[in-house]
Amino acid sequence: MTHIAVVDDETAITELLAHYLGTHGFRTTQLHSGRALMALMPADPPELVLLDLGLPGEDGFAIARQLREHWRCGLVIITGRGDSVDKVVGLEVGADDYVTKPFDLRELVARIKAVLRRIEPALAAGAPAVRSATVEAAPGQGVSFLGWRLDLAARRLDDPSGSEVRLTTGEFELLAALVQHPGRVLSRDFLLEQTRGREAAPFDRTIDVQVGRLRKKIESDPENPQIIKSVRGAGYIFVPAVAPAAG
Image 1 (spheres, rainbow, N blue to C red):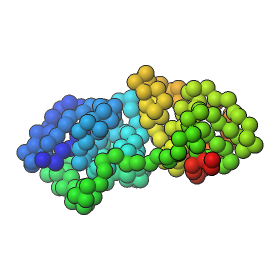
Image 2: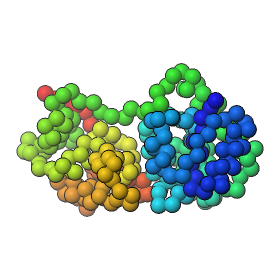
Image 3: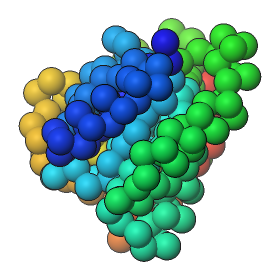
Image 4: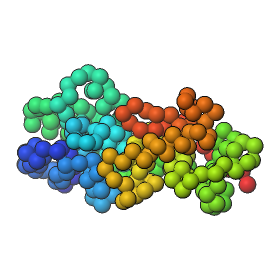
């Protein structure tokens, strides 16, 4: 049975959708937060996610970006936001479809089936559920960008002149996470998970503070950053090309 994750903070909606989708032969999992969705993905990855943008205390667009960055599945946004700008942003972050509330259940199922037909070739071909977007470095080599060199094993950062730049543990872990996902928008939740794991608390703004400190050490103009850029409402992106460092 095709597995669909239904993510909405309103239990009445998830129950309604789960029941209706069940009558059409789908297996469903009801979830009420982005964190619950991210916990489900590695354990029981669905073929498609129905995601509500209006989850309390969470950025629906950031969740969509994180899902699209790391998982290969269908994504249909369901939301009360009918603004055309929101719809464009939703599609730009990788949603396969965008459905506004209130919606007709029969139309929703038709849209779901259409999305599944489009992504079926990739699933049938055995495409991996996890999207790999990391830059791998040989042990002890690390990575380089714009003349900088980050030794992941020695936990050392050298500037283009070869001088070591001292980093705190948090700054190093943040930079390591960024350089291993160059050119991709990384949400604060993803960066928190990479740097602090389960110690990260809801609404933790540590990442913003760490980014500010890191910019002062690697940006020529921290007030106009060109290496670590902010993406409004989404997170941060590491701009320069990254390559394994020469021996």
